[in-house]
Length: 275
Image (cartoon, rainbow, N blue to C red; front, side, top):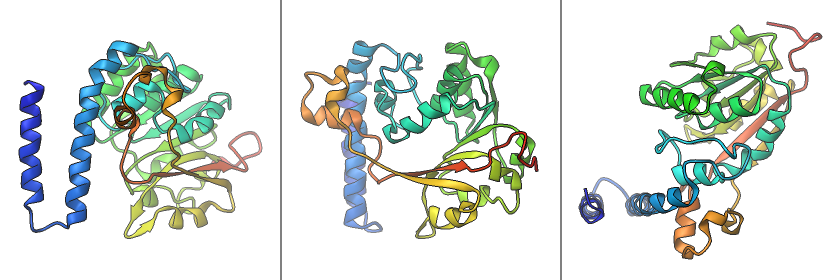
């Protein structure tokens, strides 16, 4: 299908959206922006793949080979190495922290699971309920030669944390609001001795951090991480591009994103309980 035909279909879809009476004008404009952003990113993708190949250009996963598609998140920021820049300091520290186990809940196509498998000696346990995401994660692990370090499964339940009690564990989690049900140290004490990097979402009109922070304030040092602006000049692959294209290339999501890093004050080890 040509770009002209794709554009025509998108315009028709936008007309339908703008004509709906069951959503607000604000929602209509948000939808229109998302469609335009996705279209511009799709148009830019071949140019940037031509400039970069399919290799992550910078950040903690620089040098990682990529597939030509992702199951979640923005392709171009992952290729450039700008994806979720706010987490890079935590990930760099994690790479040198001696974790023997990393649990990635909501692994998508494996950007973090495979990236950390390349950087650490840990076994990566990657989970995603989407079958396509798991298939892509497996392909990405094989592409980077770390398939023997990455295990894949579908659903992760709150009680499953107990299986990793006593290990030096980092948990990375993005479960679109289900984090409140998943992370409860009263129900699973092993969580008190694990480090947790959790994407925060709005749940029932509240940020999930409002429920999570009190649960861990006695066992963890908690750092809130907020979204930061991007500097297009930091990515040479964007040189010479119009400002609008550089903006869309670096755009990850419209709504502001938050994360929280919970660092255990008593990580699992010789003096830590194992249950």
